[in-house]
Image (tube, rainbow over all chains, first blue to last red; front, side, top):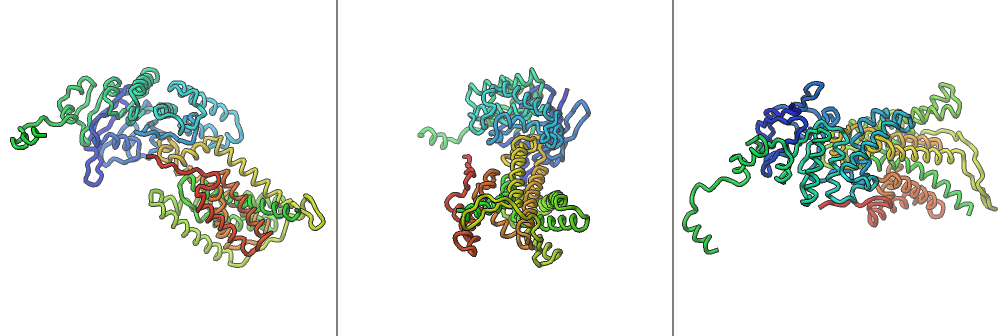
Length: 277
Length: 304
């Protein structure tokens, strides 16, 4: 079952080709990792999927039970609301002056606005809204528990440790019941222990909640330990796609990461200079 | 002593009016980081709509005093809210991604357009409304003076407190309020959570305009004199109030408004009335020099 199809996607910035006829699929309920050297176009791809950039060529299609949904040309809030695509960033993008609980409630904004008749029913204290608000708080507390932050529900998130903020961001994304969760380097800046906890959390989200995840990550232990499928980019092109084991031994991937093996000997005079050093 | 108390009450009344206008400055600054210099004109338009609506309701449709006031309040809020929405839509939304100076200049242009529009359509002469609500209660008296708190002053202070409480509840307790705060802190992330940021910004302008229009209605009743130019000075003073309280902060707007009202009233009472505006704007300069974040404002922490 495919959830997302990226077909022939391309975008250039001035003369720079950031993505060049990129095609791949994201299987439903699995974790797909996008890897590649710096500048390969991974974050650009996320920016296009979430509606921040508009692609110049190609299409992105989300396959839902209700039928396919083309995401090109749609604004960011529309993609979040109607396609159910949630995203985290390389650094914490929580609302720093809100509590952890409020951050998770903001993610349920549209449902609450509808239930509260654009907040009017909420002000009047109508029963239907009270129930929706209670459900939203229950859901937020559930996810706080999942990421181990129950005790910090009413703490302004700006004062939480960085590792906890990253976990809270994932919880916030899950509060929106996303069809697709796009995680941009979730392990960046985490220590090895936090990194392991993150892998456990993402695996739990896959096994228990069946959420499809698209992961951009540099930490290979996270990528290899977690993903069902890996797509490798270099200079905006796809150079490999497949299971992690396959990718690990792919010559094109090794070349992209480690460079070409030297195909001519170093000239003698330079070699002598190097010896002297 | 009685003289002091009387000036205190007058200052508080004036201060709540400034506070209502200051909220519009502070909320708009909080969400898009611009000073809406056309906001004083929104207040002026509110005063004109209030006058027209009140006279229309009482003279033309034969409403009584209370009915006329309620009709004026509703109509003023409705139409001024629409003005606020349109101003944002026409003058600021097209400049959303532009450098910060562009919307600022657009705001000044909007302010000039609105002043001239009202001057041309309503005339340059001063409009007057005879005092409607006479009487009040005697607070205290000593041998020289009786301190009087008029019904109108009570109404102004009371209505302001109700509106302030309502706004605080909306911002802190409702889904819309959370979205509003989220957009103020990180609009791009708010959009990625499915919030229609432009709509929240529009709603913020409407709320600011409605509160300013209530202030306009109050001024029309309190002073009974309005003209097309009142928005400039009142707007600048409300802006001073917002900066004094800490721009971006709602309680700050109330605190700043009351402070400016008291400074103005007490300066007029004990020093020279000609220099009351000088006193108010000196406060603006002093705040900007010594505490640019205002009383309740937060210093922006640059993340490295």
